[in-house]
Image (tube, rainbow, N blue to C red):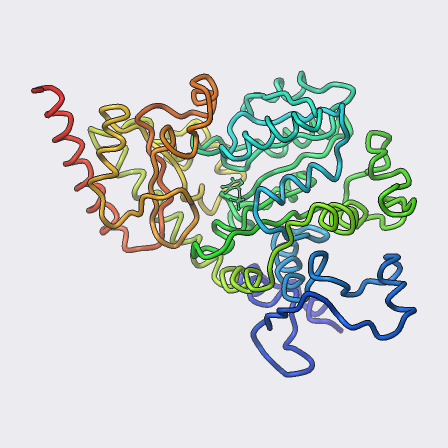
Length: 439
Ligand SMILES: *Cc1c(COP(=O)(O)O)cnc(C)c1O
């Protein structure tokens, strides 16, 4: 009897153990870093069987690696998916997830409340590949429904949008997608599977930038795609997955691998042909991060709510977008989808517009001014001049970004220290506003 059969283990147990046994050759308890490009085949027959995908075995670390495989299995387990494929970045993961199911002339419906880098990718890379795109306000179910066309292949959204804090009504949007035989792809980076498991609510594909909370320490770039394994890729809309693949000697991925059809194509074709493989060393660091995911997230969400409440009562801050605040319009969705907490990334508008936002940041010492989120350390950025710089004013407004908007990623420090530092920052803002008035 395997451990999994013995008992349905809790999240905290699985974040430490899922996907790994102590190494049978050495007894090593930690996951070894298999820093190897390639693997010696037992004999020519098994080598052929691996390359034919008749047997599952290691060939080359662009396609699979034992350290990376533990990370993939652990994330799939925590998200409740059938399996996962890791990538060198979150951006590579979502490109591969989409590339696997799209052809030129197809159409994707995407939320307007997305990470800036995702907006660039969808707009420019998909455009280059002649894939059409419709943007919808993720909060309006009818907008998703009305955007569907005969050539639509997927819905794309984030669990918690950045930086406006929109919480996706996953179950409703998944139901609309399924009414049209479409998969819902959810970027769950900001929630992590500890706060929300989109697959439990009907999402078909879950994407992460592991760079953020999964790794949790700001050391490594990586991404991962998890698939539920329940979507019917043979429903007539996805010949690219159901019909014989010219890139894999006529293999029909969905018919051959069933539950794993999409994931096999994602690995054996997309990862093989586009590259972007996660390094074993980074997979090791992500596994270190995953071991404490629930512990960090508990502190992240508690600190974030305390900082949000401080800001809401501060005269120089407005529009605090933390969806967990009692008066947030997303509160019912938080209660449903994020009962453990509404994440640790949110924004607010600093008084004084662009100069105010930048002034606040110059007055901070503990918060790090940089373009990342999901580190154990607290981070701050002014999106209009950095991450969202490529967006037009209309796109900025659609993404909920104003000239004075400041985005926080609240870390796991002593919360009183974080608030003390923000108070100092606001003194700086007040001084600069006074300066403007008297100047
Ligand atoms: C960072 C991020 C990405 C991109 O991931 P990288 O690892 O930076 O390539 C995608 N989506 C969200 C929500 C992110 O925060």
